[in-house]
Length: 587
Image 1 (cartoon, helix red, strand yellow):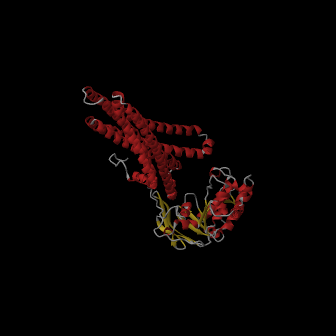
Image 2 (cartoon, one colour):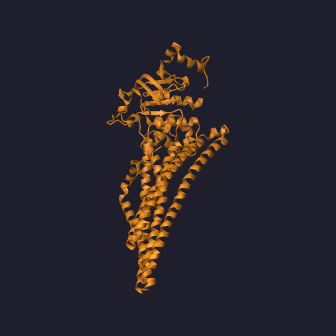
Image 3 (cartoon, rainbow, N blue to C red):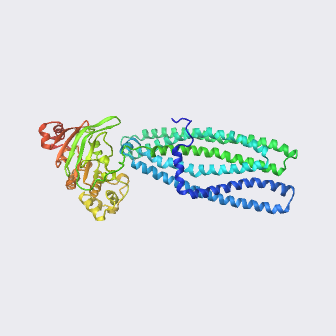
């Protein structure tokens, strides 16, 4: 919890203001427009004096023409200033938000895999959409209104001092008292607004999970349970919002009451001086109008401060992401890994995740073009091991080397350009089949895309769709079967044509017939490529040059199928669990 003694504007808030540098000229014009608006307000208050004294009391016919003309000119300039400041400040505000959204998304994309494992997808989505929208309101409305009202206050203060300086001193002394509630209420608004934003982010994460997992919700009959959970979240949000509303609703009446005291005193004191003949009626009414107009922007500042506090709370949440440090850093002078066959070595590698030892003293080398199969019970560390190769994580001790080069010294892009991955869970995008395959190489031709689709045995089912390769597959490929999705992922990896291949249970989602076809495609793909294959079904790794058994984060056995069977260790045990009387068990 932050202390109240922290500065009103922190460095991150100043960074937000620095985003305006590209639009400084528009901001300058908007400021001029706001000054014109403020000057017109002050001029309106001032014109009351000659209107009353010269037109209504002295009955001056010439002033009867001049004063209305002056009023029209003042209001014309006010309208021009109003349009200019609204358009220009909205432009500046929207552009700042565009830059902020881009910066936030850019940062999220650059953060390591560990960040996404810790954060909820819905929370990240809320930062980019909900929180940034609140900042937009602050920039477009609160900042604009604050500048406009400050200029108005300056103009009106000049008018009241010019008209009756003794009363102006009193009004000026009351101003600090009027600003005090603004500060007090603003602190509370920021506190409750921050809570609302956190709750909204939690709700977004909840909605993302329950919508994505709707099939499981229905299968287990948990609709009522999820409804109750959602109702609790909306009630918590409601209570926080009502606390914020109570503070925001209280600020205006308090400001009205303070303004009432000030106006009442001005009427009493000034009225007695008008009766005694010290002030003219026009002078006093003009002064009174200026004082009433003066309290109006002060009251607006109270409301705008509430919006400002909500925006600053949202800014804190957005910059919490932007300022997140990554542990996967580009080296100062990165080396470029050239394209071509590569060897991959794990040199005494250890890895911890949240203080839990996941890998320990891993020594393993795969020669260029060699196929290494990683087997073992779930949770042994196989996936973590291969995730170190593209630097999704960095080793805590030891080094992963490609052709002898520590990958932490290489350019991250050049490293990942050498690697193609097919995961256990097919990851596809809500786009056409063609674009999903081309994700592996955006410069690929139509012929290349169709060629890899044939190699992945996907061409036949693709052409069975009315739109063929232009078929949109829906969110996460929801319109395809598991086998079809996996074959598209394999086609995508084929198209990338990378010299290092990682297959993490790549055939697990396929039926027997599809598995046989894709297995042949994978065997062709792996020729000449350094390949790491994670498999639970031992029948799918007969082609491996070596089999490595991983358990408890350590390599406990290594060799060919025959060698491992002969020593009758962990691999022999796994094999026995999957095969009965020489026949593979259906897993």
